Image 1 (tube, rainbow, N blue to C red):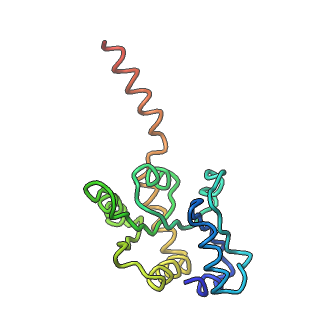
Image 2 (image 1 turned 90 degrees about the horizontal axis):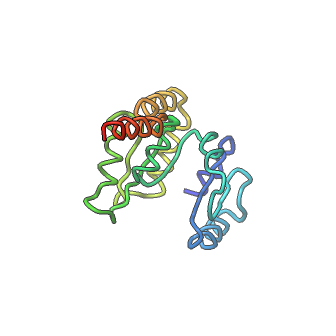
Image 3 (image 1 turned 120 degrees about the horizontal axis):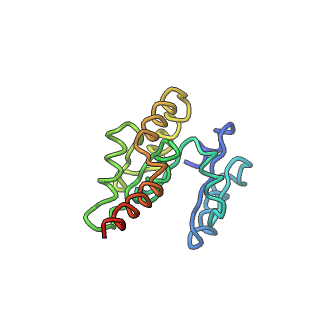
Amino acid sequence: MAPGLAEMKHIHFVYVTGDSYFDKTREEIRSKLGSIPHHLHIMPYVHNMPEVLAATSLIVNRAGASFLAEITSLGIPSILIPSPNVTNNHQEANARQLEKAGAAKVILEKDLTGDNLYQSIEQIMNDLKVQQLMSSHSKSLGKPDAANVIVEEMRRISKRS
């Protein structure tokens, strides 16, 4: 997959590995490409996630509910790889809801290959209409005012007591 991403010079990729996988991932990519291209950013952690998400055209991620709430409130299209190691396979259920709405493509971990992930990224990123449609569907699922709704409901409930 790395050689394909290296060729997509018009797209910046931010690959957040976590501390445990940072060195290994960076070295694997260097060994495949010789050097890390300027448009491929490998990071152990992102300290400015709101700014990164604001500039994101497509996200590849697990399918935890909190993160999906963030990306749908921003209308970010996604490729979701649900973790199979969670209670009641809830991440797949989360991901399938976004897929059903047209906001995401789902690739199960057991089916994941570098080739099919690259093809999915390429298919979405090279078709502006697909990106826009997925973004619109994602945004329609989002609840950007959720915190205010919760506060108002708490106020309403507390007045009854």
